[in-house]
Length: 356
Image (cartoon, rainbow, N blue to C red):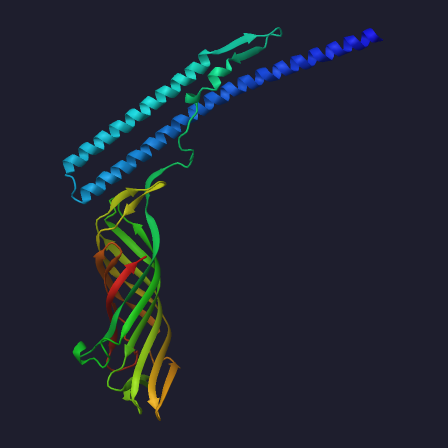
């Protein structure tokens, strides 16, 4: 019995030892293969890092050229030198990786065991060398070199508001020039129409608030199907009509554009002179008259919300000219303000338009 137990113990020990050695051989083999696979992946990372750095250098050179710090000839020479440097960097680093892979393969021994299975052995010294480790950027997101054609942003506009009345000039307007103002707030998209980026389409949605402040102690009164100005029975400090519109603006924008680069992708840079031509169409949401006056020595404020026979459908022409995100802005309603008045009045606004 004792002999049987000893024999069984020796058999189990031998089996465990064989299994452990086989596991060690597998781990060594896997470790070598993983190390070589990781070195192969580093080639792509190196190319991405060097190309990103080249884009940054080219962008800096273009900015210096735009600021007249260097000539076009100097810019071309600097770009060529930068490209050659980055290409050489890539070549040198890829050669180093190839040499490291060759080092691992050359120092890996493959032998057959008693069962005819291949075993790989390598000195741990070659798998622990510091120069086989890679400390570059680990970001795996591919750089998008194609500029995004459609972007979006907020914009607002503000300025003076008044009307063009048939048969008379702005000097004869019954509305205060300084007291009549407009404000517009919107969200719009910009789509590049041609590859150079020179022509673009801007479209979106916006709220327009057009105000008309009556002059000479007058205020707005609905007289049947018409809206007229009548003298207020008390001393009025403010009689202001405000029309709130929801419109869809559409502009064709023209101006120089260049391709710039950030850490993730290329994009069209339109921070330059530009001109926009187009129009808008939408609906009148509400019309409100605000009155501020004194009655029997007391300050009174009234807020009257009614149609005032204003047009329900709003449409007109608009344009802007400027630099970067700010420009001079003008818009003109083709629809009359009061739809049934015998003499047409068309809203006109002049001010600034600012992109955010």
